[in-house]
Image (cartoon, rainbow, N blue to C red; front, top):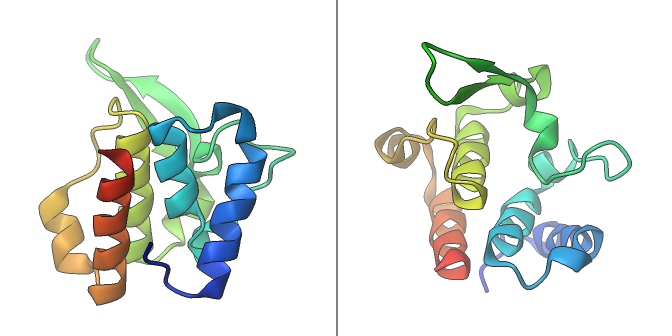
Amino acid sequence: MFYLDEDHEGNHWQMREFFKHQMPDKEYETACYIMGVSRLFSEFRPEKHEYPFSWAVDDYIEVNEGPLKPVYSKAFHVLSSGERQLVLLGMNLYSSSNQDFNLCDALITWDEDYYQVFQQALEIRK
């Protein structure tokens, strides 16, 4: 399994522990892997966030009677563009109802390490 560093690996296992009752669900496993990235993990508070990406969204609004659209949190907006793309990827793989992930934007933004995180996340999710 590819990890950015030892912190990513340790954080991944901590996330798995927080969501142990949902394991081995592939959606949760993928979310826990992506949330293990240190910068993302630092935003998660198990006592406050019920779902892996709850911290990234403040609310949802309905647009033109279509699907609900997320209103992203300040914590989400201060991430680098590559980190935001990882969060959007994770949200899409966790719940495909999030349509904000754009693969072309992500590929332009990610460095080799984040691209490898992307590949590993796909392997976990399939």
